[in-house]
Length: 280
Image (cartoon, rainbow, N blue to C red; front, side, top):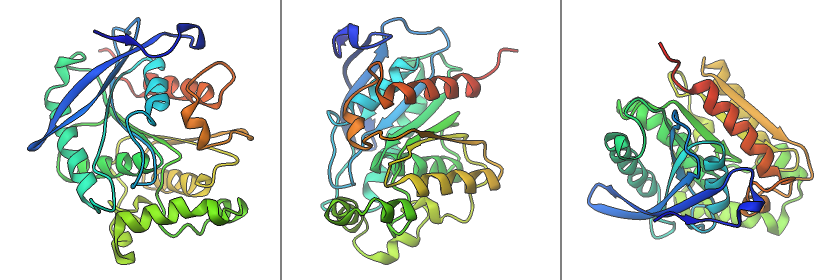
């Protein structure tokens, strides 16, 4: 049974969820399936990975972003992944890719056979989603209609102007600690799947929607990645939400009227529309 996620009055469209398990190789990941109360006939399927800093985060912390994706009109499967430092690169990514392959094979369980498939995530989950798009291309995996990245962690150097401008200081430690826990050693950052902003081969990737904010510490790496995707011939759209947005704290607020995730929901809805297969 699908249970109401939050009081319907908070949203333009009611969103429901139920527990959903997906096999990832020999593992079974216990996640959630989110759906709008009125599912569009042409609804796409989004594989969502929660935020955090590689060493933190959970299905619960990813609830607001998963809800945003569902309110935009998609069916959403949100799954956990192994956290660092117990599980370093590429363990979480390989687990996520195995889940993506299974979701791609079993897509008809949740949506139509011709429905578009997307990957999405925020912060560390955005990193994994971007890397999954590369892996799907390189391994001839499931065909992706798009990648939806919310404030993705793409650059392990943490040296962009937006990061320095925020005077992160101690607040920057979660990001630095997360990268250290995930990579284990700095040389791992050279791998394009680990830090996608360093990838030299970006052509052939699925279209991308990258959502950041004026006051987002990860703003500049998000913008830079969008520019590099466009330069490689990938259709990438970067949306910058006006400050103060309080990102990433706002990821916990949900797409309520007046919230920045409400604005992000509109961007996602537009992206789902333009990337959906056109009827013949």
